[in-house]
Image (cartoon, rainbow, N blue to C red):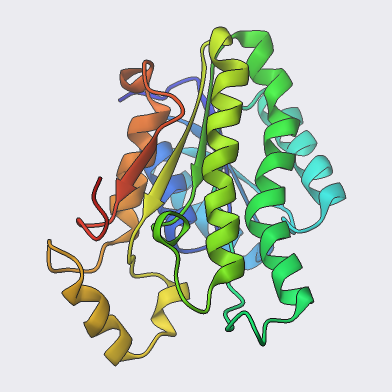
Length: 247
């Protein structure tokens, strides 16, 4: 996989899966616009990519803010000239049983996890259409496929990403633009680090491969779907869950 000459934009790139995706794409030759709210972490990532001989730029975006998405992606295109690969990774959780869930927590999760992906796609799609090449990869979740108690907002947002993926794949396929999703299972990240040991042990028992996944496992799948080797795959959900959900 060689991404020389390609430009990638990764949201939620300051940590976890987004950071791993940015590093993987840069290592394969892509110039990477890394987007998130944490300026310090973004600058550290840009420096790390640069030290390894890659090219990257930090784009400060609060993904829940439509105007910041528009201005941030406009800035990225101004710096790099285009966006070939979009990785919609930014996401949050606001867990609570549905009977106690506040409307604000529903709205914030849907806005951050789903609406932001639609807005980012809107901002890059004209660039992809002009060059008749593009890769859109949405990071969904195994819980968007099977549900999870206490995560009605999160599961709904991730299930929505799957529908969005398929709709966009149909809209732009004739222009050699693919749109796919990656559905991680239990991945060791800052988001899952806050969960208790008992929960983690229970989760591992549900995984046939017998281990929690790493961010790099997801990044490898993203890199494949972004590559020319995956040019005949679109509208697909690639499960990276250790066998937690099959079929």
